[in-house]
Each structure stands twice: as C-alpha cells, then as structure tokens.
Length: 453
Image 1 (cartoon, rainbow, N blue to C red):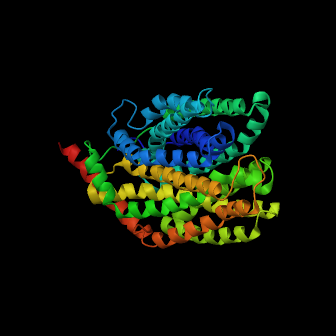
Image 2 (tube, rainbow, N blue to C red):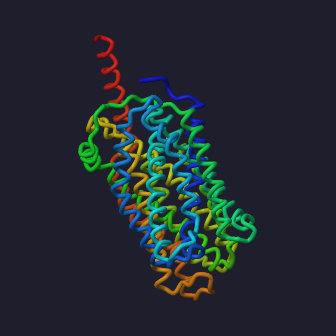
Image 3 (spheres, rainbow, N blue to C red):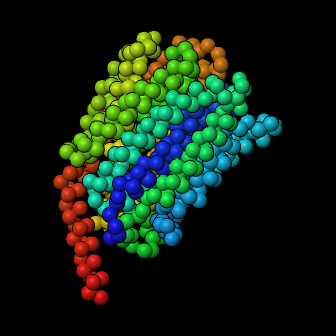
C-alpha cells in the first residue's frame, strides 16, 4: 500500500464533484424540456432518443469500467481520464444545447448524434470519478467519509445548478431562449473542465491493484457472480427511478401544474436543502448501523413521504414545497448509501474472486443511473404525450393529475419494490467487518512475501 489518503486529496475529490454535478444537473434536468419546447422535437421522439442512448450505455458503461481498470498512466488509472476527457465533454455539452439551422431530418440526426456522444463522454468521467474513493483508501471508514463529503457537496452542486439554471435562462440571451440555453451550457462546460482538472491534480490513487490483467470476459463474469452487487443494482435502479422522475419532470410540473417556470427554482431549492440534510446525516448513521439498515429505513421513509405528497396535491404551494423537501432528504441519503454499498461490493469481490475490478463495478452504478434516467425519462414523455400534453399550451386536469402521480406515487411504488429486494442484501455490518479483516490479513501476507524476496 502507498501513502494513505490526505485531507488535500479528499478536497480534490470534492472539487471534481462540483463541476461534475453542475454538468449533470444541466443535461439531466433541462435537456428534455429543451428538446420538446425549444428544439421542437416531439415528446415521443425525445423519449425514443433517450431510450436508444441508454440501450447503447448497456454496452458502453461496462466497457468504460474495463478500460479504466486497464489504463496505464503515470498519474494513475483513473485520474488521467479527468484531465484528457473533460474538454471533450464540455464541447459536446455545448453542442447538445444548440439548435442547428438545417432541415428537419438533419436536425433529428444532429440530436441523436450529439446526445449519444454526450452520454459516452460523461461516462468516461463519471466512472473514473466515482471509482477514485475505492483506490484513494482501503479503509472503509475513510472511504465512507470521502463518499459522504463528496456526496454532500455533489448535492450542493446539483441543487445550485437546478436553482440558477432557470435564472440564467431567464436573464441570458437578451430574450432569445435558444441563445440563453447555449450560453448557460458554455458557462457550465467551462466550470466543469476547470474542476475536473483541479481534482485530477490533487487526488492520489493509494490502493494498489490486486490483479494486473483484467479481460472483459473475466470482469463481466466476476460481476455477474457478485450477488451483493446484483441485489444492490436492482434496489439502486428503483431508487434512481424515484429520483429521476422528479428531476425529469420538475420543469414541466412547475410550469404547468404549479403555474410558472419560476417555481422550478423553488422546487430545486427544496430539493437542495433536503438532499443536503440527507447527505450530511447518512455517513453518521452508516457508521453506527451499517448501510443495509440505513437504506432500508430510507426506503420506508420514502414510501411514507411519497404517499403524503400525493394526497397533498398541487394546488397548495407551501405543502408541495414541504413534501418536496422531505422527499429530497430520502433522495440525498439514498445516493450516499448506494455509493458506500457499491464500494463494499468491491471489497467483497476482492475476497471472493481475488479481483477488485473497481472500474467495472463502479460502472454498474453509472449504468443504473443512466438506465433509470432512460426508463423514467422515456416513459414520462411517452405518457405525457399519450395523455394529451401539448408544449406551451394550457394542460388538461388529467395531464396535471398525471404529473402529480409521477412526482409522488410513482416514487412510492419504486421504494416498495426496492425495500423487498434490499432485505436480501447479505453485506450487513458484521459481514463487512469480516471482509475487512480478511483483506488486511491477505495484504499483510503479501507485503511480508515481498520483504522476504
């Protein structure tokens, strides 16, 4: 083992997450309504586009995990990706928020190409960034601390992004909404590039790899034999779906159900406050009770808050804001717990298969996030279009009630199924203690062998 993680290195990881989540907040929360209400694409076309892109991610994300695991660089397997790919991601992000002056067919092609490239470019940074905590330290408590701190500030970045984006769109471009979107994308791209590079320069990869040669076949085989990871993936998918539905239709919900796009800023502010509270408290509860018990408690709370949210309706603004904040506490905490549990399955893989495979295991988390975005984003747009949504028009009560259901009862259903699945997750606090001890014994034996040679 190399030098242990320092405060400066943790700070570096936090900095990278700020720009990373600002970029994510822009395209995950606003690209959908940009496509339908500015670009002029139909909800059905946009939904299909999202679905096709996520199908490609089913191949792209694991490949990125393997590629990052196999990377050889003077500055580390994962840090190098933050430096070299961040400018490319920034450039593609701006392209996605430009409306080309061309024929309808070519505009459709442009949307497909730029959006799929955006997903691929984001993956080349998302997988390495969230893999870094697993190679910054082998100590589970310190690793949980990194996830907790980075997750906390990631929530801040996502929340700030969601709050200021509507403000930027309203004030940039001199009344030209197309120009406003483009300028906003440029600002976020530049911020992202700067923070990625700072992060790469400050972070260090302190945990040595267990195996040198990792083939795609071997990596995928160990992945599908990792029972805790598969269970976590299923539960995490449902938790992400509960989160993504709120992100995906908040602008629609604010504009049409609450009556003004300005309310998207208030909803985003409540989302920020709630997620910050959840992210701040989660590491403490995980250290005391273990991640499994914490995530089960979160799923139960998510069910309760979501059901209350449904019956509150959308006509009482203060109640909507309150329930949005309470629901966001669950969302923020769930994200931190899922990240921690993903890192735990890496330790499990080391003990069970003698392969950590940090990149490919972390890629499952990014894939799940994208898959949830695709399922919810596609379904939401299909449903809104099917039930009579018309961009820029006054919506029917039926459409507004559908939006309310999607913001509340749909997450409740997701949490119920996730709760049932999580019960079977085998890595409780006791099991993880045994895994940690086994890893220590193996590494001490390995270091002793090296000294005797």
